[in-house]
Length: 154
Image (cartoon, rainbow, N blue to C red):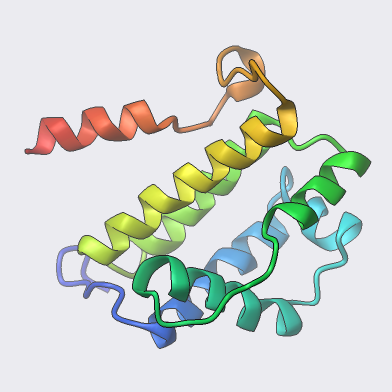
């Protein structure tokens, strides 16, 4: 796909493809793959429709998602700590899955929303005063960097 000719994310069908691409990479990833495959035992066939509902609601407000998105992450964190670097890797893979397929306002919003979700989950799991600084945060893309990048482009 031509990098500059990529269309924007336009609906559920596009999200299905992005999420399939993301989870293929995430399951195979040495850092975060075990959270999905070993600890959660994620059944991708069951998970994809639910997570697509989540993203369809987040981007387009067209799906009905009423699950608690925090609870599964808290359960994983109780078994094995989810660190800033883990969330950073999630962000990297999420951005790559989108960038490899789509360009446009919805694609950008999906990337920003993914970063916000990662940051919020990390802060809720790590507790008050959680830092995204230091060795543990290697690879994490903080929102401030994204905001600086957007200002530089404008």
